[in-house]
Length: 234
Length: 133
Image (cartoon, rainbow over all chains, first blue to last red; front, side):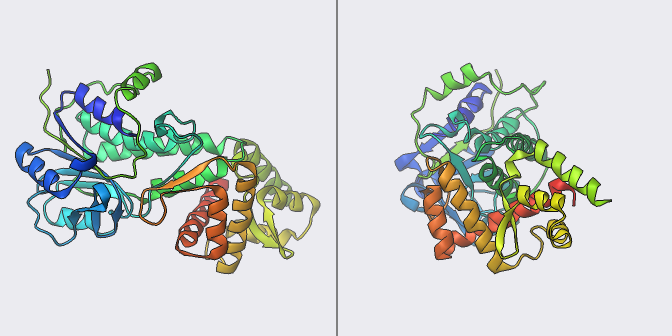
């Protein structure tokens, strides 16, 4: 999957990950995992609408106006269309520490059927996503993680603006779209791990590829939920 | 700023940001005109006032009908040059589409077409801010 590197990075940083993948990306599993693990961070990839987030086979996992127990006090990051429009606001109103997500469709472009991070075009869209997780894993605040992600969007927007290739304009168009619909609600000072200094540079490509190879690639449109518990460093 | 300075600035912009040269930015004289063509019109002294006004207002309060036509032209060129790439949407409307399929949605003016138009409008605003008009 596109975010296997993020999961690997969290593990490297000493997090326990409950990877609710495929058939486990359903409401009951998510709810019981959160109750069992009391995670500082909930990270979900799946379809969404303004008022709901879905998992496997588009089963609803979170919906506006539902009881807040599952998200109270947690940092929630949903890589999902539209949930930043209503659901994210509702979550923060009900006690989520921070919500990061997208208030419109999350759109990206690829030229090969591979992990987007291994695609010449696709990586521009998923590095800013990965940056949020990596920053949080390094003990940076939610506000810092958000800004680091925006910086990454801007880096790739500049990069593709300078390209004279036929696809460059469409890539910039959707990079700008995704950047501008990325939202943060709630606390900008929340952390999910102790500070890790100095913040490391991006993984060398060879290492990153090796990590990716651990998990088979799946187009990340099927529901996936990940709960990461508060990490203890070793 | 004189016209010559304006043209020089736009030329520099296109050299530094070639990604936007082929983006249709306005309908002038009844046809979609790309940014590069608009700059060439200025160099020739053709419809100068109209071109300058267009560039100053790029993406702001766009005429919706014109926007559909410009977006259609834009996706036509992408479909011709890069038919192999795919656009993915993390939402229920459509999981993936080729540029040709995106073009069909634009022509049909359906929900996905509207989503694409919104992005195109944002692109025009972005180009305007980038030029510093």
